[in-house]
Every structure is written in C-alpha cells, then in structure tokens.
Length: 320
Ligand SMILES: Nc1ncnc2c1ncn2[C@@H]1O[C@H](COP(=O)(O)OP(=O)(O)OP(=O)(O)O)[C@@H](O)[C@H]1O
Image 1 (cartoon, rainbow, N blue to C red):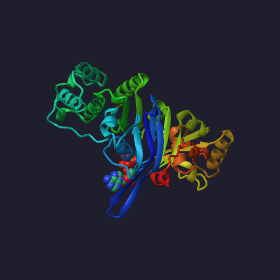
Image 2: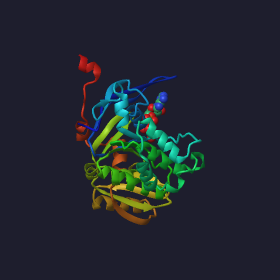
Image 3: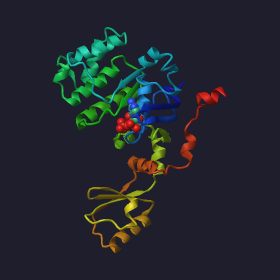
Image 4: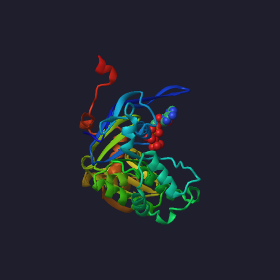
C-alpha cells in the first residue's frame, strides 16, 4: 500500500476574476519509506496539494489516501498518520516550548511522551529553550519548534513544506541530519523546497509541478542522467552575443550554459571570442538538478516522463 496516494486531484479556487484551477488531475503515489521531493516554481500548486493532504483544504475532485485512509471521509485517522511542518510560522505566543509540544501531543491523544519530547528538543538544538516563551524565540528557533510539533506523535509520514526557507546553515544541517535519521528508521518523507541542491542530496524520487500539472516524475538519479552534459560557467561584464543569450542562465556576472559535449563548449567559447566578449574564471561542471528543473520548466522534459505519471480515472470518467 502506498504511504500517500494522490488520485486525479483537482482544486479550483473561486476568485473575484472567476474560477482558478490550481491543480489539474494530479496523480502521484509515494511509497513507504521514500524520501520524496515535490518541486515547482512559485504558484505551481505545491502548498495547495499539501494542504489537501493535511485536510486544511478540500479537493474539488479526486481522492487523497494516507496509508489507505481517505483524507476527507476518514480525516482523523489520516491526519494522525501525518506530521506536517507548515510554511507559515503560527504559534500561541503564551506557551513555553515544552507546553506547546505537550499541547500538540494532547491534540493527538498522546500522553506521557516526555522522553520523546526531550529527544526532539535535543535533536533540534532546542534543549536550552524548553522553558522559553514562544515569543522570546528567533525565527529560526520557532521553525525548529514547528518541526518538533509536527513530530510529537511520531507520525509515520513527515510532510515538510519549505522547512529551510530563510534558516541558517547550522539549522539546515541539524534538521536534515535528524530527518534523514527518521527516514532511515522507516518514516516516509514528503518535502517541498526551492533549494534544489537539498532535493538532489536528500530525495530518492522527485515530482515537478508546473501550473498545477505534474510535468516530471522519476527517480532523482534518472532525472540527473537525463541532464547528461556539462555546464560551461564563466564570468563576464559584457553582453552575450544574440545567438548565445537565449541559451544562457545569467546571475549577475556569472553565466552558465549547458553543453552536450566538449565540442559544444569549444563552439560557445569560439562564438564569445568572435564577438569580442572577454570572459574570466572559466569552469566546466556536471549538470545538476537545477539544470534539469530549468529544462523541464522550459517545456523540454523527455517525452517518456509523461508516460510514467500514473493516471487514475476522474470521478466523472469512473462513473461513466
Ligand atoms: N485561497 C486561494 N484562493 C485563490 N487562489 C489561490 C488560493 N491559494 C492559492 N491560490 C493560487 O493557487 C496557485 C497555487 O498556489 P500554491 O500556494 O499552492 O503554490 P506553491 O507551489 O506552493 O507556491 P510557492 O512556491 O510560492 O509556495 C497560485 O496561483 C495561487 O495564487
């Protein structure tokens, strides 16, 4: 049985401008024990999908099952299996850290779990803040508490919605060590992030969403293989020749260009020389997940990816 199964999930919001379809027949299965990444640009529908999973929003059509429990018709059962770390920092400012964790435990009907609360506080670097009031904590510490809150009832499935947005390197490392340990112990992890190097390092499988559609779904290693090629990286102050500009990713002075082979690298450099563009700090690196992501978002996903997305009948089709 899948840990999480999204079956043809569609979500239409009503807006003053008329109905807006944020998700269009999204189908995905996440297996037990997977570390699964959900990627996509701003507004792709990631938070909407997670909100439906967590029972915070209702799908317009389709079904979501958590270890077989339907998030709508069997909400309490489905919710208990999930530990959701939301994107927004929302707290009751009057609780201490330990009180907040005890309160959350009570919500799930879990009692006498102080040993686990202590382990969470220790693993997330919060041990010396247990008695601190929530409003005395920095933003990064509040985020650690959110992670601890999501895990108090030892859920088999951990859902992290951009958990490292705006947090420092130390917390990222602490957090990933801890989540990786829980994943090794058998917990399933669903992660959304804009940090593609984190997704590349942590996730065994990845889905990419774009405007509410799944546009890529594969093992991370296969996605990386599909990007087979090298990236020419250099710095310049000059504008690129018109023929090269559309092929380049430019960040300030740094230009990155995906090349299939060494000949293509040489061809790019020759064109730059001919155009009189002075370049510095030339490097060649292997293509990474960010290159794959940009390729997919530009509509250049390999043709067979579409075929790997499972399809479930939409309710109307099933009834027909
Ligand atoms: N309550 C709402 N009413 C109307 N439209 C909404 C609502 N919530 C989200 N949307 C729209 O649905 C689309 C998907 O939003 P969502 O927050 O799921 O994207 P996301 O992939 O999580 O983006 P980000 O990476 O910025 O967090 C966006 O176009 C957003 O404006």
